[in-house]
Length: 130
Image (cartoon, rainbow, N blue to C red; front, side, top):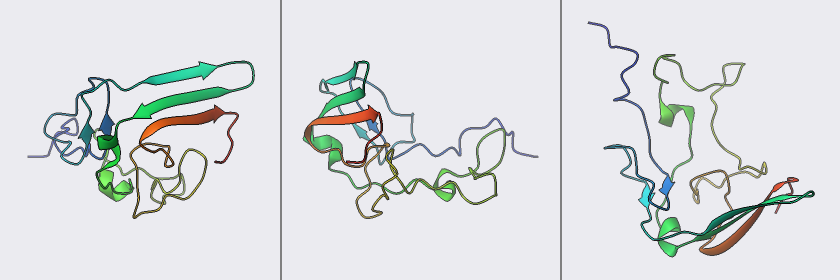
């Protein structure tokens, strides 16, 4: 019997940080971090910039994480395809929001690889390299 393509039991959900009461995907997030304490996040907007301010507790950055790759994610339900570029090359996340290469030995969850414990400020627009 063919496997139903809507079955999400094989979906990979891992290497995330859940903040402010967000809950992990059931039975899937063994390598993720759940922070129960209040985490301060603000998006500041003005005519010239959009800035994300986030305060991370120390526990949020203690765990080691992997680069997110097409192979790690596996086939997407329904489409039964890997995440790929239009030319068929794997869609591996090897650079951060700013285009800076991600160090495979020091991967942080999410698009901002230069976050640290405590207060962080990230200018989202206009994009500038840190």
